[in-house]
Amino acid sequence: MITIKQIGEALKELLGKREMTYQELSNRTKISKPYIAEIISTNRIPAKEKIEKIAAAFEINPFYFREYRLGILTEYLQDNPHYLAVENKEELIEMLDYRKHLEEARDQKEMLQKERMDLEHRLVETRNNKKNLEKNREVMMRQNRIMDFIMEATGKVDVNKLSNDDMELVVRLLERLSKK
Image 1: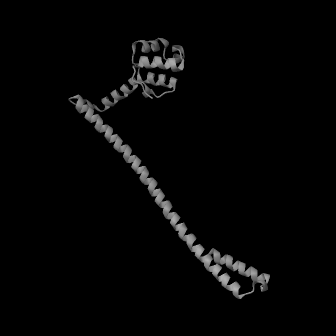
Image 2: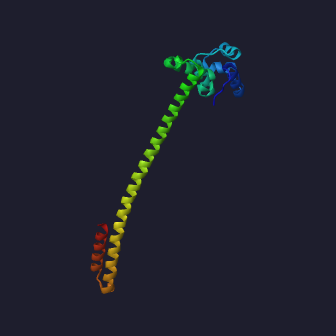
Image 3: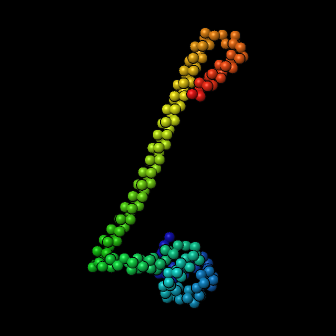
């Protein structure tokens, strides 16, 4: 949320919405009540730090205030004087648009890198699932061979005539075979 209103008008509007008095704002920000009144009545632009205190008192981002954004831009232009070396408005706008497109391209690159990492992760998972599937398939084939053997053996042997020791031996043998 941001405003394009001058700071005095924006501050007055916030005070009204929050039903806050000049004194309450002064107490929260440690900015004098007369100074707050001056900001509101004359649109005096406070220092960046004071705008940050005011924003904190309202629990909003300081970027809400137009003057804060302008201050940040001014600092940026002072740190990057080549932007001031343009000869006309169109050239400045073109330069700023280029910067905007460059930032958008960086954002897209980051997004694509994240998507790529996600796809690589899914590929590894798919490969692992395929390996597990192959292992499960081998186990099932082994179990089927054992079942075939048991079916063939039980057809030739009367299971009811086997002793308990023989049955335990068969069970242990089957357990051992199923683990391999």
